[in-house]
Length: 71
Length: 183
Image: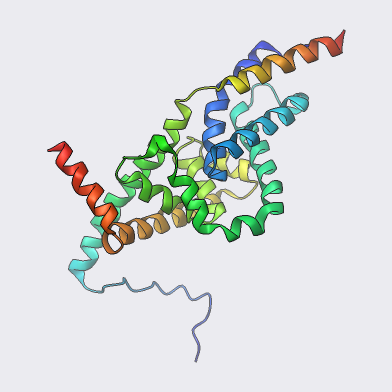
């Protein structure tokens, strides 16, 4: 008999055993905190670069083009 | 008519975060900036379809994502072939060098499937709600939640593998050096 592909049986932890499971859970939380923090640092570093001139200029230019077109 | 001042302010205010999202999608700053530029051109050409009072940032993110998706589809083969070099691109930003842990994180992030990475970034870094992220990605809220969960699980797996089993000599040296510096 083959396993049903949609079987909802929980997969056993990689290293079965209570202590290992507890360590895994703590490790999991630590890693999740680290993931969240690193993701935000990476993102914020780019956000903190602000608006590059290229885009500020683009907006100005488009604004002027619009003005001319509407006259 | 020029751009409405409040619209222009809202667009300008959204650009830094839009760039960060674009870089997380492309993994390459130059390509990301081109993507942002194309997004702005499209958005401003269709500014009439923006509903005042709604979230400008979410509107721009949606346009950028859709545009990236259509471009990405064209380049899919190229991107799939460069799994390793994509990770390299992410690692090679000079401003990130020397930060222990960042390289590993970038590499792990680059290994996530596209759907999961964007969901994680939208919710975990851009600060969108699950509902907003679902609207940006054109999918159900439950789908976003499950993508974010899978992304977190996968990243945790990748990072524990990299920090324990694959802690190569180079990384070890860097980690030890960093520890000594701090001491």
